[in-house]
Length: 185
Length: 185
DNA sequence: GTCTATATCAAGATAGAC
DNA sequence: GTCTATCTTGATATAGAC
Image 1 (cartoon, rainbow over the protein chains, first blue to last red):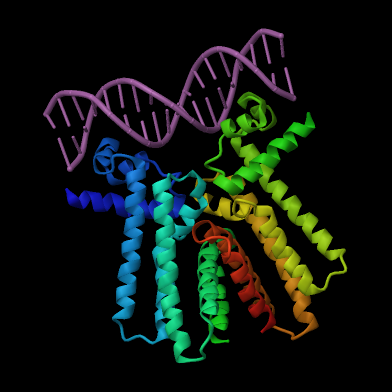
Image 2 (cartoon, helix red, strand yellow):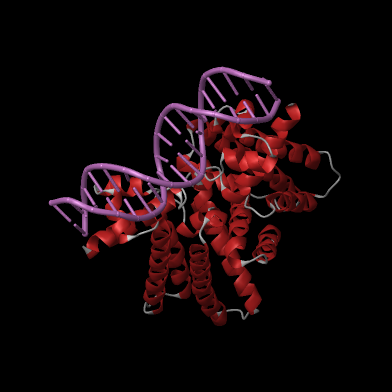
Protein backbone atom coordinates (compact mmCIF):
# COMPACT_ATOMS: atom_id res chain seq x y z
CA UNK A 1 0.00 0.00 0.00
CA UNK A 2 1.67 3.19 -1.22
CA UNK A 3 -0.87 5.06 0.86
CA UNK A 4 0.40 3.66 4.10
CA UNK A 5 3.88 4.92 3.32
CA UNK A 6 2.61 8.46 2.91
CA UNK A 7 0.58 8.07 6.04
CA UNK A 8 3.69 7.10 8.02
CA UNK A 9 5.60 10.01 6.54
CA UNK A 10 2.87 12.48 7.45
CA UNK A 11 2.75 11.26 11.01
CA UNK A 12 6.55 11.22 11.32
CA UNK A 13 6.73 14.84 10.17
CA UNK A 14 4.05 15.81 12.67
CA UNK A 15 5.77 14.01 15.54
CA UNK A 16 9.16 15.47 14.65
CA UNK A 17 7.65 18.93 15.00
CA UNK A 18 6.26 17.96 18.39
CA UNK A 19 9.00 15.78 19.91
CA UNK A 20 12.01 15.82 17.61
CA UNK A 21 13.66 13.17 15.47
CA UNK A 22 15.67 11.58 18.28
CA UNK A 23 12.68 11.32 20.60
CA UNK A 24 10.25 9.60 18.22
CA UNK A 25 10.17 5.82 17.99
CA UNK A 26 8.74 3.21 15.66
CA UNK A 27 6.57 2.28 18.61
CA UNK A 28 5.01 5.77 18.68
CA UNK A 29 4.32 5.62 14.98
CA UNK A 30 2.95 2.07 14.93
CA UNK A 31 0.62 2.59 17.87
CA UNK A 32 -0.85 5.79 16.46
CA UNK A 33 -1.39 4.16 13.07
CA UNK A 34 -2.72 0.89 14.45
CA UNK A 35 -0.07 -1.22 12.74
CA UNK A 36 2.98 -3.08 14.01
CA UNK A 37 6.54 -1.83 14.21
CA UNK A 38 7.58 -4.47 11.66
CA UNK A 39 5.13 -3.01 9.20
CA UNK A 40 6.80 0.37 9.44
CA UNK A 41 10.22 -1.23 9.08
CA UNK A 42 8.98 -2.66 5.80
CA UNK A 43 8.39 0.83 4.38
CA UNK A 44 11.42 2.42 6.05
CA UNK A 45 13.96 -0.24 6.86
CA UNK A 46 16.00 1.97 9.17
CA UNK A 47 15.06 5.03 11.15
CA UNK A 48 17.64 6.90 9.09
CA UNK A 49 15.63 6.09 5.94
CA UNK A 50 12.55 7.56 7.54
CA UNK A 51 14.50 10.66 8.51
CA UNK A 52 15.76 11.14 4.97
CA UNK A 53 12.26 10.67 3.57
CA UNK A 54 10.96 13.31 5.96
CA UNK A 55 13.54 15.84 4.77
CA UNK A 56 12.55 15.09 1.18
CA UNK A 57 8.94 15.72 2.05
CA UNK A 58 9.98 19.04 3.60
CA UNK A 59 11.84 19.95 0.43
CA UNK A 60 8.77 19.03 -1.62
CA UNK A 61 6.54 21.20 0.56
CA UNK A 62 8.83 24.16 0.03
CA UNK A 63 8.90 23.61 -3.71
CA UNK A 64 5.11 23.54 -3.79
CA UNK A 65 5.03 26.76 -1.81
CA UNK A 66 7.48 28.39 -4.22
CA UNK A 67 5.40 27.34 -7.22
CA UNK A 68 2.21 28.58 -5.62
CA UNK A 69 3.75 31.94 -4.80
CA UNK A 70 5.30 32.42 -8.22
CA UNK A 71 2.06 31.56 -10.02
CA UNK A 72 -0.12 33.78 -7.88
CA UNK A 73 -1.28 37.33 -8.41
CA UNK A 74 -0.31 38.37 -4.89
CA UNK A 75 1.67 41.49 -4.22
CA UNK A 76 5.16 40.96 -2.93
CA UNK A 77 4.19 41.84 0.60
CA UNK A 78 1.31 39.39 0.44
CA UNK A 79 3.70 36.72 -0.76
CA UNK A 80 5.94 37.36 2.20
CA UNK A 81 3.05 37.17 4.64
CA UNK A 82 1.85 34.02 2.93
CA UNK A 83 5.31 32.50 3.33
CA UNK A 84 5.33 33.33 7.03
CA UNK A 85 1.74 32.22 7.54
CA UNK A 86 2.54 28.83 6.00
CA UNK A 87 5.44 28.30 8.40
CA UNK A 88 3.17 29.00 11.36
CA UNK A 89 0.22 27.05 10.01
CA UNK A 90 2.28 23.93 9.36
CA UNK A 91 3.82 23.92 12.81
CA UNK A 92 0.56 23.25 14.64
CA UNK A 93 1.29 22.28 18.23
CA UNK A 94 4.97 21.91 17.43
CA UNK A 95 7.92 23.87 16.15
CA UNK A 96 9.32 24.11 12.63
CA UNK A 97 10.76 20.74 11.57
CA UNK A 98 13.96 22.47 10.49
CA UNK A 99 14.41 23.87 14.00
CA UNK A 100 13.70 20.44 15.37
CA UNK A 101 16.43 18.86 13.23
CA UNK A 102 18.80 21.72 14.07
CA UNK A 103 18.41 21.01 17.78
CA UNK A 104 19.12 17.32 17.25
CA UNK A 105 21.85 18.13 14.73
CA UNK A 106 24.88 16.52 16.37
CA UNK A 107 22.92 13.32 17.02
CA UNK A 108 21.80 12.96 13.40
CA UNK A 109 23.33 10.53 10.89
CA UNK A 110 25.47 12.26 8.24
CA UNK A 111 22.96 11.75 5.43
CA UNK A 112 20.18 13.45 7.36
CA UNK A 113 22.48 16.30 8.35
CA UNK A 114 23.27 16.94 4.68
CA UNK A 115 19.61 16.80 3.71
CA UNK A 116 18.63 19.23 6.45
CA UNK A 117 21.30 21.66 5.31
CA UNK A 118 19.98 21.43 1.76
CA UNK A 119 16.40 22.11 2.84
CA UNK A 120 17.55 24.93 5.07
CA UNK A 121 19.43 26.60 2.22
CA UNK A 122 16.52 26.14 -0.13
CA UNK A 123 14.16 27.73 2.37
CA UNK A 124 16.52 30.68 2.71
CA UNK A 125 16.63 31.10 -1.05
CA UNK A 126 12.85 31.06 -1.36
CA UNK A 127 12.71 33.90 1.12
CA UNK A 128 15.56 35.79 -0.53
CA UNK A 129 13.74 35.58 -3.86
CA UNK A 130 10.64 37.11 -2.38
CA UNK A 131 12.57 39.87 -0.64
CA UNK A 132 14.70 40.68 -3.68
CA UNK A 133 11.58 41.20 -5.72
CA UNK A 134 10.30 43.51 -3.00
CA UNK A 135 13.41 45.61 -2.91
CA UNK A 136 13.65 45.88 -6.65
CA UNK A 137 10.27 47.55 -6.64
CA UNK A 138 11.10 50.06 -3.93
CA UNK A 139 14.43 51.13 -2.67
CA UNK A 140 17.31 49.31 -4.31
CA UNK A 141 19.43 47.77 -1.61
CA UNK A 142 22.67 45.85 -1.52
CA UNK A 143 22.13 42.13 -1.97
CA UNK A 144 23.88 41.46 1.35
CA UNK A 145 21.19 43.47 3.09
CA UNK A 146 18.49 41.32 1.58
CA UNK A 147 20.35 38.22 2.67
CA UNK A 148 20.79 39.39 6.24
CA UNK A 149 17.15 40.41 6.33
CA UNK A 150 16.20 36.91 5.19
CA UNK A 151 18.40 35.33 7.87
CA UNK A 152 16.76 37.54 10.46
CA UNK A 153 13.18 36.86 9.42
CA UNK A 154 13.79 33.10 9.44
CA UNK A 155 15.55 33.23 12.81
CA UNK A 156 12.74 35.32 14.25
CA UNK A 157 9.94 33.07 13.11
CA UNK A 158 11.60 29.84 14.15
CA UNK A 159 12.74 31.31 17.45
CA UNK A 160 9.27 32.67 18.16
CA UNK A 161 7.67 29.28 17.46
CA UNK A 162 9.92 27.83 20.13
CA UNK A 163 9.27 30.62 22.64
CA UNK A 164 5.57 29.99 22.19
CA UNK A 165 6.15 26.87 24.27
CA UNK A 166 7.57 28.67 27.29
CA UNK A 167 6.09 32.16 27.02
CA UNK A 168 2.72 31.61 25.37
CA UNK A 169 0.98 32.05 22.07
CA UNK A 170 1.14 35.81 21.68
CA UNK A 171 4.88 35.76 21.08
CA UNK A 172 4.29 35.20 17.39
CA UNK A 173 1.98 38.09 16.65
CA UNK A 174 4.29 40.47 18.48
CA UNK A 175 7.31 39.27 16.56
CA UNK A 176 5.38 39.66 13.31
CA UNK A 177 4.86 43.33 14.08
CA UNK A 178 8.58 43.83 14.48
CA UNK A 179 9.29 41.96 11.25
CA UNK A 180 6.95 44.37 9.49
CA UNK A 181 8.93 47.27 10.93
CA UNK A 182 12.10 45.76 9.48
CA UNK A 183 10.61 45.32 6.06
CA UNK A 184 9.14 48.78 5.78
CA UNK A 185 12.05 50.81 7.09
CA UNK B 1 33.09 15.75 46.91
CA UNK B 2 30.98 18.83 46.33
CA UNK B 3 33.28 19.68 43.45
CA UNK B 4 32.31 16.62 41.48
CA UNK B 5 28.69 17.65 41.62
CA UNK B 6 29.47 21.02 40.07
CA UNK B 7 31.64 19.29 37.51
CA UNK B 8 28.74 17.04 36.48
CA UNK B 9 26.43 20.02 36.28
CA UNK B 10 28.86 21.97 34.10
CA UNK B 11 29.23 19.07 31.72
CA UNK B 12 25.50 18.41 31.62
CA UNK B 13 24.81 22.02 30.70
CA UNK B 14 27.43 21.87 27.97
CA UNK B 15 26.05 18.62 26.54
CA UNK B 16 22.48 19.89 26.67
CA UNK B 17 23.54 22.80 24.48
CA UNK B 18 25.15 20.37 22.07
CA UNK B 19 22.78 17.39 22.04
CA UNK B 20 19.73 18.27 24.08
CA UNK B 21 18.35 16.93 27.36
CA UNK B 22 16.66 13.85 25.89
CA UNK B 23 19.75 12.80 23.94
CA UNK B 24 22.29 12.92 26.75
CA UNK B 25 22.81 9.88 28.96
CA UNK B 26 24.47 9.09 32.28
CA UNK B 27 26.83 7.02 30.17
CA UNK B 28 27.95 10.09 28.19
CA UNK B 29 28.54 12.02 31.38
CA UNK B 30 30.33 9.24 33.25
CA UNK B 31 32.68 8.42 30.38
CA UNK B 32 33.69 12.03 29.83
CA UNK B 33 34.31 12.52 33.54
CA UNK B 34 36.07 9.20 34.04
CA UNK B 35 33.65 7.96 36.70
CA UNK B 36 30.90 5.35 36.71
CA UNK B 37 27.22 5.86 36.05
CA UNK B 38 26.44 4.87 39.63
CA UNK B 39 28.61 7.68 40.86
CA UNK B 40 26.55 10.20 38.95
CA UNK B 41 23.35 8.63 40.20
CA UNK B 42 24.68 9.31 43.70
CA UNK B 43 24.76 13.06 43.06
CA UNK B 44 21.61 13.15 40.92
CA UNK B 45 19.45 10.16 41.73
CA UNK B 46 17.22 10.55 38.69
CA UNK B 47 17.84 12.22 35.37
CA UNK B 48 14.98 14.53 36.25
CA UNK B 49 16.97 15.79 39.26
CA UNK B 50 19.90 16.56 37.00
CA UNK B 51 17.60 18.41 34.61
CA UNK B 52 16.17 20.52 37.41
CA UNK B 53 19.65 21.31 38.72
CA UNK B 54 20.67 22.43 35.24
CA UNK B 55 17.75 24.84 35.01
CA UNK B 56 18.69 26.26 38.42
CA UNK B 57 22.22 26.78 37.20
CA UNK B 58 20.81 28.61 34.18
CA UNK B 59 18.73 30.81 36.45
CA UNK B 60 21.82 31.54 38.55
CA UNK B 61 23.82 32.49 35.47
CA UNK B 62 21.12 34.95 34.43
CA UNK B 63 21.00 36.46 37.91
CA UNK B 64 24.76 36.96 37.85
CA UNK B 65 24.47 38.61 34.47
CA UNK B 66 21.74 40.92 35.74
CA UNK B 67 23.84 41.91 38.77
CA UNK B 68 26.87 42.55 36.63
CA UNK B 69 24.92 44.71 34.22
CA UNK B 70 23.19 46.72 36.92
CA UNK B 71 26.45 47.41 38.77
CA UNK B 72 28.37 48.44 35.68
CA UNK B 73 29.02 51.84 34.19
CA UNK B 74 28.05 50.71 30.69
CA UNK B 75 25.70 52.69 28.55
CA UNK B 76 22.36 51.07 27.90
CA UNK B 77 23.34 50.09 24.40
CA UNK B 78 26.52 48.52 25.73
CA UNK B 79 24.46 46.59 28.26
CA UNK B 80 22.29 45.23 25.50
CA UNK B 81 25.28 44.21 23.42
CA UNK B 82 26.82 42.61 26.50
CA UNK B 83 23.61 40.67 27.09
CA UNK B 84 23.61 39.41 23.52
CA UNK B 85 27.35 38.69 23.53
CA UNK B 86 26.96 36.55 26.66
CA UNK B 87 24.26 34.44 25.01
CA UNK B 88 26.50 33.78 22.06
CA UNK B 89 29.66 33.24 24.12
CA UNK B 90 27.99 30.69 26.40
CA UNK B 91 26.60 28.67 23.54
CA UNK B 92 29.98 27.53 22.20
CA UNK B 93 29.51 24.74 19.71
CA UNK B 94 25.89 24.37 20.72
CA UNK B 95 22.67 26.31 20.89
CA UNK B 96 21.13 28.16 23.81
CA UNK B 97 20.09 25.72 26.56
CA UNK B 98 16.64 27.33 26.68
CA UNK B 99 16.17 26.58 22.98
CA UNK B 100 17.36 23.08 23.61
CA UNK B 101 14.77 22.52 26.35
CA UNK B 102 12.10 24.15 24.22
CA UNK B 103 12.72 21.66 21.44
CA UNK B 104 12.47 18.75 23.87
CA UNK B 105 9.58 20.40 25.68
CA UNK B 106 6.84 17.78 25.26
CA UNK B 107 9.23 15.01 26.33
CA UNK B 108 10.25 16.76 29.55
CA UNK B 109 8.96 15.86 33.01
CA UNK B 110 6.51 18.43 34.42
CA UNK B 111 8.96 19.82 36.98
CA UNK B 112 11.56 20.59 34.35
CA UNK B 113 8.95 22.15 32.08
CA UNK B 114 7.94 24.52 34.88
CA UNK B 115 11.55 25.40 35.63
CA UNK B 116 12.31 26.12 32.00
CA UNK B 117 9.29 28.40 31.79
CA UNK B 118 10.52 30.28 34.86
CA UNK B 119 14.01 30.74 33.44
CA UNK B 120 12.57 31.77 30.10
CA UNK B 121 10.38 34.43 31.71
CA UNK B 122 13.24 35.67 33.83
CA UNK B 123 15.46 36.01 30.78
CA UNK B 124 12.74 37.98 29.03
CA UNK B 125 12.44 40.32 32.00
CA UNK B 126 16.17 40.95 32.13
CA UNK B 127 16.02 42.03 28.52
CA UNK B 128 12.88 44.12 29.03
CA UNK B 129 14.57 45.94 31.90
CA UNK B 130 17.50 46.85 29.70
CA UNK B 131 15.28 48.00 26.86
CA UNK B 132 12.94 49.98 29.08
CA UNK B 133 15.90 51.95 30.42
CA UNK B 134 16.94 52.60 26.86
CA UNK B 135 13.59 53.91 25.78
CA UNK B 136 13.16 56.07 28.85
CA UNK B 137 16.28 57.92 27.82
CA UNK B 138 15.21 58.52 24.25
CA UNK B 139 11.82 58.26 22.75
CA UNK B 140 9.17 57.19 25.20
CA UNK B 141 7.40 54.17 23.78
CA UNK B 142 4.46 52.10 24.85
CA UNK B 143 5.47 49.28 27.18
CA UNK B 144 3.95 46.73 24.77
CA UNK B 145 6.40 47.87 22.13
CA UNK B 146 9.31 47.23 24.46
CA UNK B 147 7.93 43.80 25.23
CA UNK B 148 7.47 42.84 21.61
CA UNK B 149 10.95 44.14 20.85
CA UNK B 150 12.31 41.93 23.63
CA UNK B 151 10.43 38.89 22.26
CA UNK B 152 11.86 39.60 18.86
CA UNK B 153 15.46 40.04 19.96
CA UNK B 154 15.37 36.81 21.94
CA UNK B 155 13.73 34.90 19.08
CA UNK B 156 16.29 36.27 16.65
CA UNK B 157 19.33 35.36 18.71
CA UNK B 158 18.14 31.88 19.58
CA UNK B 159 16.96 31.21 16.06
CA UNK B 160 20.24 32.44 14.60
CA UNK B 161 22.24 30.19 16.94
CA UNK B 162 20.30 27.25 15.50
CA UNK B 163 20.67 28.35 11.89
CA UNK B 164 24.42 28.56 12.46
CA UNK B 165 24.33 24.77 12.37
CA UNK B 166 22.80 24.48 8.91
CA UNK B 167 23.79 27.75 7.23
CA UNK B 168 27.17 28.60 8.80
CA UNK B 169 28.68 30.97 11.31
CA UNK B 170 28.00 34.30 9.63
CA UNK B 171 24.28 34.08 10.31
CA UNK B 172 24.78 35.64 13.71
CA UNK B 173 26.65 38.76 12.71
CA UNK B 174 24.12 39.47 9.99
CA UNK B 175 21.22 39.09 12.37
CA UNK B 176 22.95 41.39 14.85
CA UNK B 177 23.02 44.13 12.23
CA UNK B 178 19.28 43.84 11.79
CA UNK B 179 18.71 43.89 15.55
CA UNK B 180 20.64 47.15 15.67
CA UNK B 181 18.34 48.54 13.02
CA UNK B 182 15.32 47.62 15.16
CA UNK B 183 16.75 49.28 18.24
CA UNK B 184 17.72 52.52 16.57
CA UNK B 185 14.63 53.15 14.50
C1' DG C 1 2.13 -5.80 2.98
C1' DT C 2 1.34 -6.91 7.55
C1' DC C 3 1.85 -9.94 11.23
C1' DT C 4 4.28 -12.57 15.59
C1' DA C 5 8.33 -13.41 17.67
C1' DT C 6 12.72 -12.49 18.94
C1' DA C 7 17.52 -10.71 18.93
C1' DT C 8 20.37 -6.97 20.42
C1' DC C 9 21.60 -3.06 22.62
C1' DA C 10 21.63 1.10 25.34
C1' DA C 11 19.35 3.72 28.86
C1' DG C 12 17.70 4.78 33.50
C1' DA C 13 17.96 3.03 37.82
C1' DT C 14 19.14 0.23 42.28
C1' DA C 15 21.73 -2.90 45.69
C1' DG C 16 25.42 -3.68 48.09
C1' DA C 17 30.73 -4.04 48.54
C1' DC C 18 34.73 -1.12 49.43
C1' DG D 1 31.75 8.97 47.38
C1' DT D 2 32.80 5.68 44.12
C1' DC D 3 32.80 1.13 42.64
C1' DT D 4 30.87 -3.63 40.41
C1' DA D 5 26.99 -5.99 39.27
C1' DT D 6 22.47 -6.39 37.96
C1' DC D 7 17.53 -5.35 36.82
C1' DT D 8 14.07 -3.34 33.77
C1' DT D 9 12.50 -1.12 30.10
C1' DG D 10 12.15 0.62 25.70
C1' DA D 11 14.21 1.09 21.11
C1' DT D 12 16.19 -0.41 16.67
C1' DA D 13 16.19 -4.08 13.88
C1' DT D 14 15.57 -8.87 11.69
C1' DA D 15 13.48 -13.60 10.53
C1' DG D 16 9.99 -15.93 8.98
C1' DA D 17 4.80 -17.14 8.95
C1' DC D 18 0.41 -15.68 6.79
